[in-house]
Length: 502
Ligand code: AHR
Figure 1 (cartoon, rainbow, N blue to C red):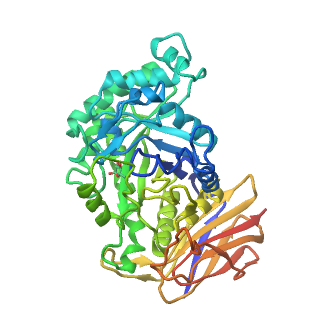
Figure 2: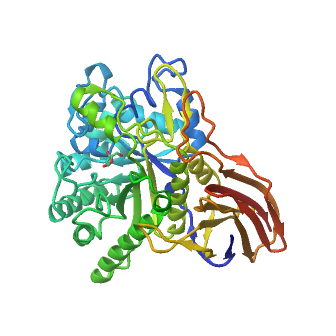
């Protein structure tokens, strides 16, 4: 089949905020312990952090990491994680029914984040804690010196402030599973008061208010509207979370699920702008899609572990092993985030290591890349610059979830610094190649510097420690022709094409 995409140099969506390539490290399962941190491992540094994992995180190029939860944060006392490790308490984590040793805390994590070149998106506990705790942690992290909390930080070894810019006001506070869950009114009030005091402590910070836990929540829309009625003047972003699955084993619907993400984003933009109009505000609240991914493969095993081995230290939970079709959807989800780059300024792939993650580790052994590692890595490394408005003409199909799904989904980004246009494209067709023509109006394309495709694998093929062969390979099937580019996109494929332009 044939498809055409037209972009024009002057029709821009917006600049990509590199924070859309964020990730997430929660004290959950083997994400921290046995994931990023494993003293005794042959690659562990003096602080106990695995160098092989750090290398993969750097390769992934995630520049922004949300921490320390997630559901975990709603029962977390950040003070448990400071001071001498030997004095730190062990606590029951009621979110995941595990044991938290607090061996890794604020200081250790900040050092690690710095070593992987990532800024930290710090979540505070607005479940079991409140506004005093909220302003104290900001003072501890960001105030230079001369106050109780800043001097305690110095005494604990960090002479310079951490300067954490972005803070999440709690996590999924609408969810009945959350410790200290709240109604929208209750959350709106506490988030407002916490926000005021946090910004009074450090007026350079940015704040993310909790939106709904997903777009199927019964209070979705009214939650956002009520929370923003309270918090609008005090926050900078509203959060979205969503996880996707192929439980029905329906590839047509599965690969279209980024349309659901797009609808979710558009709805939340409308709510933000409704409150803006209602308040007559000049300020725009943007979106932080701070949890997104595929999550379902591990559900059964997790139920078993929760029943049979509660209160374990770092049990292997939420360890989804991703297959090829998951990588295709993750690619599609990245295209959707890019298409909304005018409003989505933060997005975090949940999570980073072992727990629904692109990187897996074996205790005492290797670290390896899951299938989903690759589309994320390519977008985070090359999807930087200005997103161009795509006009796509492509045949469509129908499926259970949507009446009309284009076989082609695609986006182009102009990287002015590198003088290149980078195209990401998903071919959703199971049978047909797409002969793509890309009209690059206003550019003078010179040559294709890279055409990388992920295709030809069984949809259920996974990467393991022993065999990680689901990965991109080079294609030669693209050429520049005047102001246009033509490329052959294989059936069921994820593609990245880099074109040098003038
Ligand atoms: O990422 C896993 C969990 O999913 C997070 O802890 C929670 O915020 C969400 O429900």
